[in-house]
Image (cartoon, rainbow, N blue to C red; front, side, top):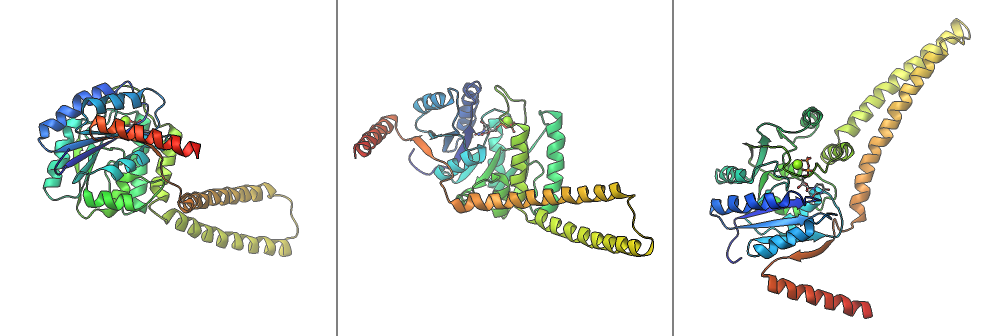
Length: 333
Ligand code: UDP
Ligand code: MG
């Protein structure tokens, strides 16, 4: 792997055993066809199937262009990409999902856009092959995000993207814990653009995102990049407080002029419950931000790497053996 590497391709892998063979069969020829120096960084995000073993086999098959990072557990897609970024040596870094939903053959399109002077190339899925509810949900989220952050992305869900070395370094240096990499990258870019790429149904296996995980991701996307929800909440709280104050004045006046009353109690209940609902939502919202601060100030490592397979396999075996020897030494201490 001598000389300058032009492109690093970073791929997060989580329980992708059924699809990895098909991925490798298309990815390597697609990159070879570009006639640029490249490396492929495969990050195993704590898969519970045989993915790690398959990655190792692939590394042994193409050690000169393949590097494998093995996490000790599951830290999520974006932390896997973050680790790939830390290790990437290329002038440009491309991220791709392992499930072949985006064709690796389109990597050339992203690089062409970078040749034209862009430092961040996003992507738009030509025709989405996902569940209908995900389509609508992501449209709605897109619109909300466009309103409350300065991030402009036509299609936030597509991970086939290319970043310049400078942006990747800025992302790694930002030390964020739970983040959404395409959005973070956008905030660091000076000439972002988007290209249209193909999109297919998952070749094998199933989506790793449950509805719950998707909602969490979108919270990260909003609370990680904007204070508008908090500000809106305090504005709404202020209006409601004014309204409540007027209501109290009215009820007191009524009590003095018309006399006591028991009717209308349930109306009061309704109003109270409404206000309590808003209050609870507000506490939850503040909690989201406090949670982010908590994660950040703990200052724990963002992920723990168990092993890195790189260089010539012989060397790698030697370092692994040395590591084992080291750990034996420290155990006997
Ligand atoms: N992924 C990961 N860690 C996770 C979840 C997903 O590394 O906790 C990887 C997964 O292997 C795939 C990519 O992230 O390469 C995107 O996941 P998926 O295709 O399931 O998401 P979807 O296309 O349904 O949004
Ligand atoms: Mg997918």
